[in-house]
Image (cartoon, rainbow, N blue to C red; front, side, top):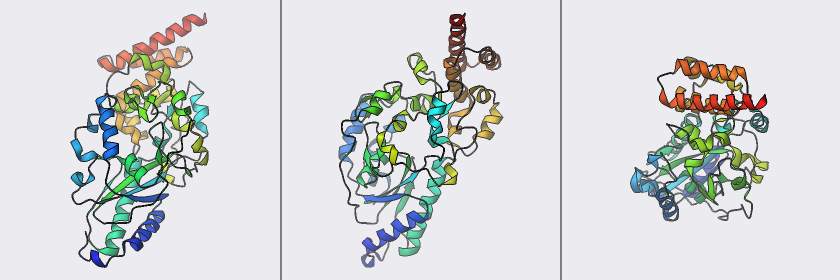
Length: 364
């Protein structure tokens, strides 16, 4: 807390912070306290059910996730922000999903890695606060460290946690990223409508390809395509492969179908504009990339985090689900020769080849 804190008008400071955040490209800012006991109970139940899969980081930090003051000492408020990311050509989503020869990549990953973009902006926001009042205690987060970002965003008035577990905003839908600044500044808490507005709608639950939303507001990550294609390091369970269709990195189905996203506005942030051809890519073209090409074409992208082998693993499943094609079978066979010693990848290539051969046989 700044030494001259007694002379600070925190209401006025919050107005300035909100104005600065808009200048930095954030679409909304809110402030919450740090009481997360209600959400801590839900998290404990979720973890106890094993819904986190291999995401051990969800529990390894103990109580720090639900006690911000344990993660950053003297924290008494959390500034939460949102930054919209829906690409201007997001209408391509349905077209890509309907074409089994294309690969679908979650819209959030089509541009520059949001972690880098938002972290820099949050640091600039903290710098502006520092210039105004002097040194103060803070730490910025963007989907990093043990932070209950959705719970904090809900408490700060950025929206409500929908039945698909994403934050939904009445005026902006759900196509946005979240970021936080933990601080020791006793800023006024944002007043907001604390109600959720999903009502009786269950569209996201009904449409989920792998039925990962096992109950309203409860997602079993082990069934979620985003988890399977991004977080999971080993074999993707056979029972989910056909349902994955052509989704090779993440899944947006629960957002694409959400009625509230009719209010979403395409982003003006050039960093989040889609890189071509990632927005509507040909599966065989992606599959033909060498590791160097993969690294070059995903430079600065969130996609790079899964690495080349998991990239090929995911595309192999999509190719197995594609219409029967000698070209696809040949490409799969070639990759099997190249990666003959990689047990994980070979298993998925074999699965895809079996599906291709079966489809070809049924055509005759």
